[in-house]
Image (tube, rainbow, N blue to C red; front, side, top):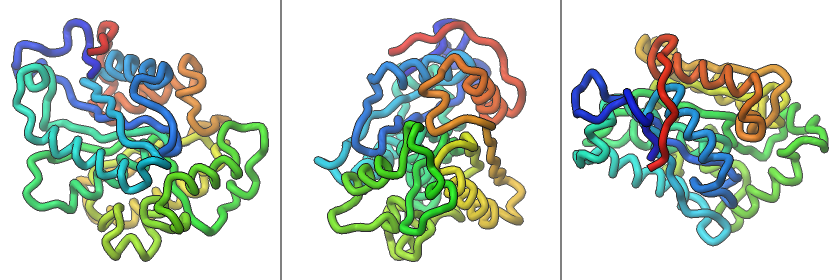
Length: 282
């Protein structure tokens, strides 16, 4: 849990409470931890500069725990959060403004968790929005950007293929709904549930040199089509020229990372946001 060190919240007053950003780390569902330095650094910055209460969550990893284990863990976390009244969280956090987010595989989890939360009846937690950073989806059909992926970037086609083989249920293809939320299987009760119609307001960010950029654009187009006619649902895609997969993780001090934080602040607060002191990690 990350909260601003001062001036954020703490006396329980509604006017001082901060929005909550639930954050799932990336790693292809097979590596990474909320304690990894790169994700710790990101969460510190988000807590300080949005500002927000950031809840960074671990989850079970493949191949020991294949999908949909990670998605089930995300669902469990949101269910737990919806019932929270303990002062250590409730005094600082505005549980009426909860955003679910993640990067790469964590963005995939955020999509599925938001879809399941929107479809479930009797949920105590109503999501204010969903933030997907360079989301990690799959499919058997190759996109043009996947086919043209250079070999000198972090996420290459061979690595992508191998991570999905390790993460998906044994024998499943990349059209499994855990990877491809729009494949027909997803309508038959897959872990993606009835997405995308029940997703909240959404912000998607990716670099235009990301191997997955075509898949990201297709995803956003599908969600935007489902949101058409719903004036309360915004679906925004922000592309960063020259940036690759995970750009704000690997270059946290770069110009693109700074702009991403400003974009997130506007999405979460509906404006330019305000400066905040350095956060602490709890």
